[in-house]
Length: 420
Image 1 (cartoon, rainbow, N blue to C red):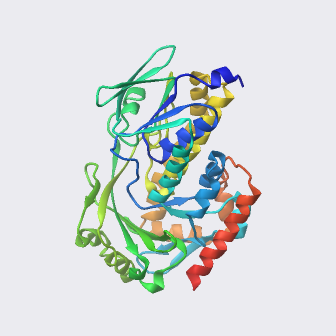
Image 2: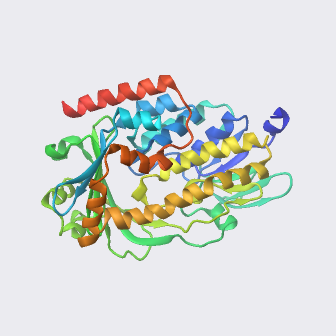
Image 3: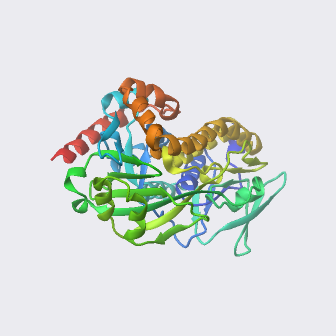
């Protein structure tokens, strides 16, 4: 590694200050580069509520140097639980206890999106090579052999050695790199609520990421923020024709898609409050995210439906891979971006496409289709499930024995709190 090339005078510009953008800034800064995060909003923060974090997310946290902080704010759940939304009983579950953690080298946990963003934000603020700018939406870019220029909505131009488009589903950077227009509208609408734990029916306060799967609908719930609240997500097919994000809705609209489900499911929804809706969108996978000194990351590169619970995890993996690829190429941005693209594109394409298939075949089937799902999934024991998930959760690992002890201690404390 040649320090003169690594310590570039011009910084790496990063469009977007969400989870992926901050992780990218932290990753490249830890490899010796300066970074400027250009965020469109007036302040740095995250909307939404819960995120599920597989072991692969914790591998990324360790590589970014925030493993301990991430573990402290996580809630460690005991199982992934699949319930029949029509009959009201359990179909199967995947245990997330010590054998799971030993197999994959890290735990499975849930966190509040804002808490995770806060950990990344603090790490970026603490790093002397990272500059954070708000009210700085990147609307276009230009480049030459020496660097890249990002043009902001204000008309200001910011120069850097490279540009990372981490500006989400509606990425302006993507429109120059790929040019594929608007996202694909799935026709599925998601309704989100966060409810105090004491409002959740006591018999359903499970220490699990619970999925109630029904015909063209599902509900997911799990505890957050040291068990102070439950994250509640209800989704159904209503052929929504266009994207909507964060629109307040009445309880009756949410319940409309669940009249055919078990009373337990409808009871959970009735306990929600301040519901907001999002129409789910994704894009077709593409093979190329790079344009010279410009590259995409996270939802700007591979937006996916929620059904694999891997959107944030993939963005975190991207950030680690991007930083390592640039470093491996000794600061040659063009070569580093090509290497990053090559290493990430098929893995994320698989998650994008299988997210769609999981929605169809696990979350939302009916009749014989659902009965076949139940039969296949009930036949698997824990070992079989671990084999199925190895490609996803194994991921690049950063071993840390001290962190592993923190995982087990934290899990034990959380499990004890759940049963008391």
